[in-house]
Length: 339
Image 1 (cartoon, rainbow, N blue to C red):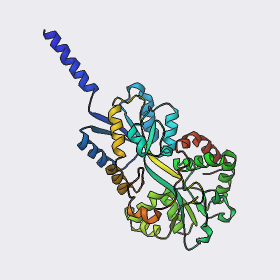
Image 2: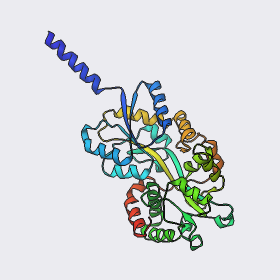
Image 3: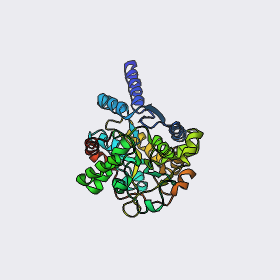
Image 4: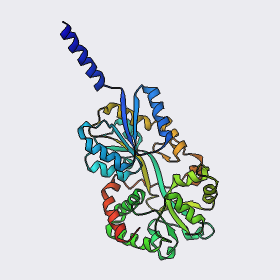
């Protein structure tokens, strides 16, 4: 009898371990506000969120090496191309639930991962040296025009956001056309690429260039004053411009997440994903990270709204294709001597 009781107790213990009320998040997003959001999820559901933070390379390496023994349930990062490439390695499982499909537009998700917030990669210009007429009908493609020779700054070719931008151009215009575009863009650069997105905006403010390409939330961070008074004043010297309003719309990227292939807590991971796409969570995200909401009915942060709320977003290009073309994009960029 004692032996049967011991076996039953052991089985109950093993069952409780297997059904641990938790979800393990591997995140390449580095926002304290995300932790606050996970705490809200826990308070509402009782599901504990364990977070491992790091860069994409180290997190992916760990997930791959641990294989079936990995405790990771959900992988979160800030680029669709990164998600797409990891997906091509077979590291995700189907992450879509009816609730997710109902609120996330099809072009901002795949069957294995979904966007949770959007960001636009746009042009910033000096109103002192660039007129409204210069930008009339401006597109990403037009950045290759010789009129911009020596006037453009942008991050290095190893930057994932630039690789996804070029990948989107390959998807829309083909490899041959994009190769020529990259070659001419490099000729139009005011200097060798260096620094982060804010450094590009600072270069325009300082008169080192007339146009910069950067994500919208970097500009908002500068205007908010959170990066210091000097950067706030510099941001006020430049203005945002949303390209391709006459055709497919402005290039969009995402922060996104997918449930990993060997997730031990898949059901809890789906619940967390669904929570991140609720109105409460979306409002928290846009108020703290200056991203655009993924779902309808949510207002962006005021700074973002003031940049231009009614711009046309690219809803034609599937962000899942960024990963598909990213290696080709990098190859083209390096051959063109994009530093």
